[in-house]
Image (tube, rainbow, N blue to C red; front, side):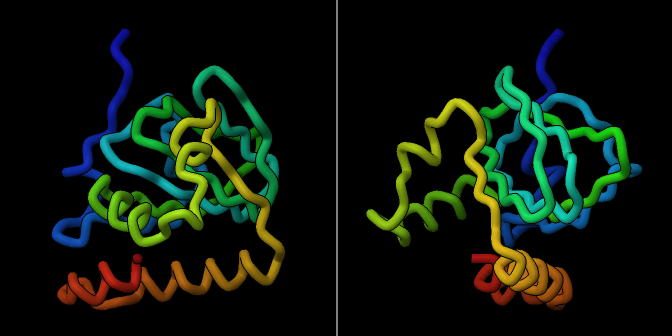
Length: 151
């Protein structure tokens, strides 16, 4: 069975090169997949089971997970779950890596066996959620503004 690879042309908005989605479990197919792009997701509920690269962890509310293009992953739960997903192009990722420079442990971020994650404090989670809501509310006809805000 060949692995499912999600294509950038179907899952990102162009010319911006990203898409932000608010995910509820009832809308997800829960299939193992990889991407042609990067993804960060922020959990809004607890007990989300994240399987990737042959390992499984249970995520709690407020965890921020960085998924690389070649990570084979899926998420599931025994209960309904919510998270915010921002998928972005390799180009945007490369620009951000260059901008962050030595402040970013790029080797860990790109080469750890399991997608790296961080548990956010409540105020950090709420701040990021608000920024992602604001991103989604920007006018779709202003790609430049949306791309800058995304970065």
